[in-house]
Amino acid sequence: MSIQSAPGEGRQSGPALAYNLAGIAVLVLLLAVGAAYLIDEMSRAARTPVPAIEDGDPIAQTISGHELTIPTAWFRYGEQIRNGFTNQIDLRVMFAPEGSDIAIPVDVTLLPRSRARTSSSLLDGVYLHQFVNETLDGVPGLVGKPMLASNGYSGESVWYDAISPNPFVAKCLEAVEADGTSQCVRTVYLPSGIAAIYAFDATVLQSWRQFDTEMERWLTSIGAW
Image (cartoon, rainbow, N blue to C red):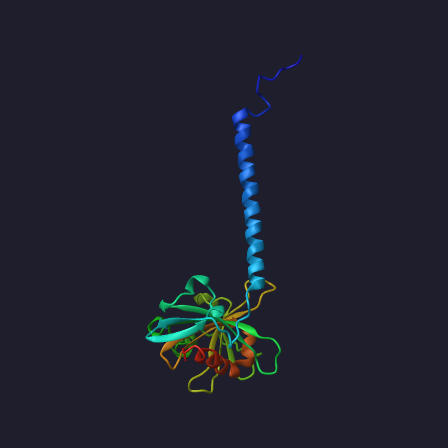
């Protein structure tokens, strides 16, 4: 005994089929646009020039009452490239340790002093109360202390110069990905009164004695120091 399918059973109706095909077309289009965007971003990154202290094409920005003259190639975000007043400037400079042929990028955020607290003040006021008993090795001249994971500092550590009255202090976070590297943050007040937040690869710690001097060289050239 054979059973015949009802008309239309086992196949999609015309409107449903058209709807599904349209959905597939939209998905393919989105994937194509996404791929094109990714290729464009990679190409743009490859074309982005490495910042150099002698860069030209500057613009003038005023922050905390100081007018800075900043090369456009130093800006991390294109929308910030404009003359006038601002309350935050995001830059990228290069740190080349003495004796090394490799320059390491350092992200610099300039802010009014009232919007930041220095790493050295946080060392005494916050960090010292969050250290575990263990001491880390690996950076000559600096003490490395892991922070209490139970207090929300999992994977974080602080490296500081225990001798100086105005110590070098940096807080670092372990790499998120297996092949990544630890990242560190250091906040200081510049002599101008502007606050500077430095974000950098933890390998920079090996040359920590040169770090502030090199940052002074870059920031003096734009009037921020």
